[in-house]
Length: 116
Image (cartoon, rainbow, N blue to C red; front, top):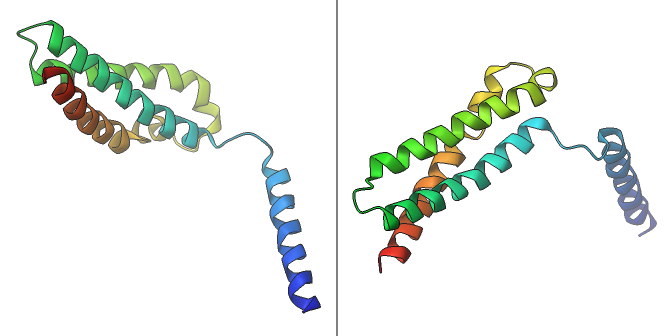
């Protein structure tokens, strides 16, 4: 029984040491990923609101808004994280799938809720 307890304490100490080594700062790519996911939801809300307010607002206009917000995030993140990532292209590609998938799903939801 004591061996199990010691192993548990040792593994907790290793995890604590690893956490202390990493510090409290998050990985820059993780920050980019999660903020883009949230911004995809925000872009979907903007697109859905505009489509409910403007009668001729099409899906293509909504996609344009989503693309515009995504490209703006690249130019905002580039100076902030350029020295902190391995390749500069990672700033552009990180979170692209999550962004557009969250935009598409949330746009459909918001559009349906606002049109009903």
